[in-house]
Amino acid sequence: MSNMGATPATSARSAPVRQYREPPVHEVVLGLNFANAIADSELESIPALLAGRFPETQPQSFAKYEMTIAPAGQQISQSEQRFNGWLFRDAGPTRVLNVGRQQVLLHAVRPGEWPNGTYAGWSAIQQEARALFELLAPIYGRGPIQRVGLRYLNRIAVPVESALEDWFSIGFAAPSFLLDPFAINLRQTWARSEGNDDLSLTVGLATIAIPANVALHEKHIGFLLDIEVFNLWPHMAPSFLDLPEWCRRAHEVENRVFEGAITDALRKRFEEITK
Picture 1 (cartoon, helix red, strand yellow):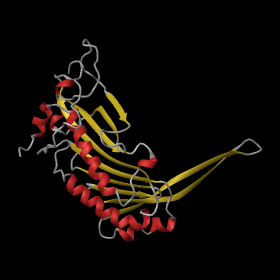
Picture 2 (cartoon, helix red, strand yellow):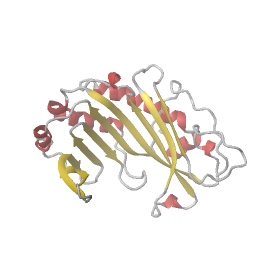
Picture 3 (cartoon, one colour):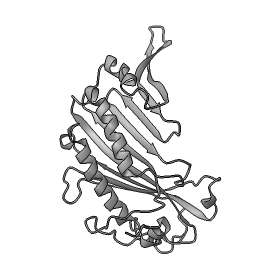
């Protein structure tokens, strides 16, 4: 791969909405952080609310360690295990739900180590999330949300002997004599998006390893295009009831950022569906 000069990204507002037969989405994460912690009794009751939805349920705990110095100089350590929530998984596992005292995280994971299995699509994921959040509303719906984030993790493989700007429209203009990037980690956060003052964005592009058992392992470099839409300031977080509308807008912005970050060469590789 040659030098890393990049052309300006397409305007988010002008990026068209496209669909692909082989999108690079590996994982979608929808996360909620709450201002107040729920009671232990409420946390313990969650498996009953989600009965039958996940075949695997695991309690989660964290260890608290304390160390003091006794008068004689010896060290005295104490540890305490505390129940901290639940981890739910389906058989895939393509759905993982993590619930805690102040956090709910839903992971929609695509089958396989590289994006090659069936992608459920945002419409299906959003419906699943909405159904789960409705079940959890009696416990988490009373308190204010501090942070909500919709995150897309895209795994993309590009040929080694090519330029970064052939595939991505984000990056930085490196000196032309620098060749074959070994490790890249670009990350930028924007306070708001045009027309959505309550939607902030973090966009990252980093090299990642391609598993040896993946056909693209040889002569390709793996990249992670990481896009998260979230509220930067707690007072701009939506209410629990407004989550569906917030998610709709967040996904729309995420999709535009994705389109603005890639080139037509990648669109052809993902095989755009002609309407």
